[in-house]
Length: 239
Image (cartoon, rainbow, N blue to C red; front, top):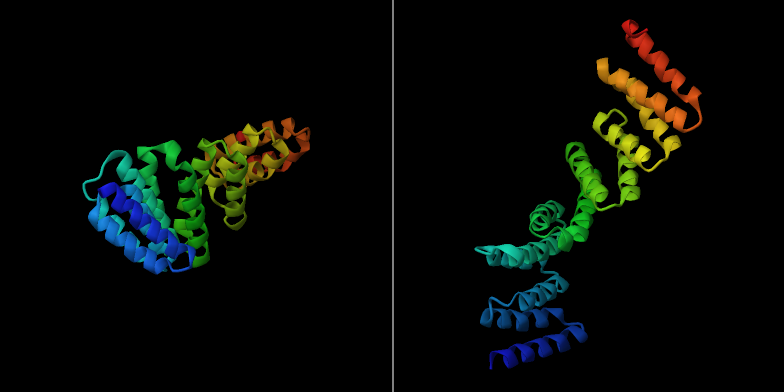
């Protein structure tokens, strides 16, 4: 019957994988998928064999076709599969888009893969020198990491970005707030001080007040002095 045929296909493909011939395994599993197009488990094995054969882009094309009309959990599984193939093919932007959609369908199931794709895409665009996209994906990665309870990694990502762009107000505010929430006032002092330097008008005053609070928490009230003097110099009406 059909079940036995699929089992034989899988067994034969496994033998070729074992002897280092994934391309032959892909051919066999391709025939199996043609006979059972709705078997997502079989399709995933086929895609893995294509990936091992250096044919990730063929797998992406097939996953794209299979996605047509799919909804719910099946769609999420196919999106995650296509994302994995896209990462192998160096298409991190495709992987992120697919996993963002899959994450909306099933957050718990696709959280780890989404974080991995965002990490890979952030590194890729940094290497490519695309600052705007790097900033966008950095802030998204930080948001996902924070919601997942991984504030330590979120801080690392932000610290890396702000060390290269110390004028990014949104990133600096987030970095400061992460350190404050983690009860690390000494670490928060740098971002808090930098915000006083680059904020303007009421936002600068608020930044100075936050800096003063953080300095008090750190047991170093003098650390806020330069920031407060900066506000008085920039905004004489605040004296």
